Image (cartoon, rainbow, N blue to C red; front, side, top):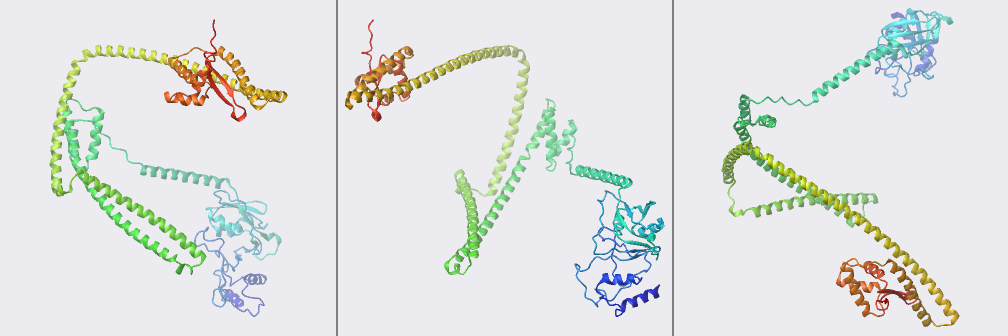
Length: 625
């Protein structure tokens, strides 16, 4: 075999006997196949890529030729320049087995089509087998793709092969399109073109479902473990009150590290109602221990305030540095916009410089406003400090802290004494309450009677309020009716005025009267209309309702009596406004309409000079009985 391989290698190197280009791998393989020789000197190609196959899979496994010798004329060996990856076509090799040979398909043809891959597919369909192919030959060909668990061969030229793993199916699909020839026979029954495709098997789908359920269980377990890990720990259970636990709790209250836990327990005991006369002194001592931490907390607050002040100073200095740099940047932009340098920039460069300058100015203004705000706050704090105390009377900080500590100690003593006094007062009040329980019944009865009396009075007031609301609604309806009647009378008056104008014009034309005579006729005819209106208003006249209306009638009568030619409503209203600013022109007009025997309305003038005036006619309209 080695000698044959060497001989074949020497043949492959003698390129003068073959009139073809050695740089064409497809032509080289065709020539070797026509001669019935192994296509030595061609680079091997994996069945599938390493990304979907097991790493290290050898495509030349079980080949009769063993290790394929290298062709020195191939690209990449030094004699021929190596082409780029896009120029190298995907070429499948001839695969030699013990009982058969597999010839690759034409590389110019499209790849064979396959169906959609079922989930968990481990079984392939192999069609186009030679009629004389046996299970041993099929296993020999496909076992190089992986471990085969079962082969189901049909009487026809196809079979189903089940592999141990899913990735082995991809290697078997790679053999689709190969032409299979048994031995060196040229009989039609000993050759066939393979068609490998995915097959849908119940066993594969069942194993895939089991695997998915297992993965789902693992995922649920992982999530549960993650939730348990992220869940905050439950608070410890609060023990019940006892003298021993109270003593331990008092020791914990003295410790700064266990103070928070101890205060939680103390708060729970107080809320449970553990405080009574027997345990009041012990609880008072624990509350006093809790109060002793106030000084420590105030000192911590003072230190944090100092740190905050220092941080403010650092921020202020950094902000001032940033502001100065912004000023420099704006100065650079302003210098660039001057004509000496501005003319040398292009239009796009000028636009960009202008945009940058505006943006920098906005940022600079914002930073300066922020700095000015900080300064104003500092000035306000300084003014507050000056108002609270005189700087000349300030003492060193050490003396102030010592005096503050002494004052705080005295305050604590005062508070403790006050609390004791309050406790004694509470005990006295409890005793008084126990003794005065007999008197509470009488007091409660008197309070119940008072409540009933107040409820009755409230119900009476509610009923009165409902009556007042009903009267108000009735008054509103009457007012709306009066307004409608007023609008109707105004419309009738306008119609009558137009008719009078037409009649006066016709009379003037027929009788030849002059314009002054027509005006006199108009003045004479208007009272006739007013008399009709007075007749209608007499039916609607109502008596006076209040002293205010009587007073208004007296004032209006006096005013109109002084003006014998009458006065319009605006003139009359302006006079009444001087006496009572709350009165309106509508109220005066309604009052005049209600009393047609005392006041009458006349229209004077023609066209644009037409004017409505009220006159006092009480002496003219008196009727003797």
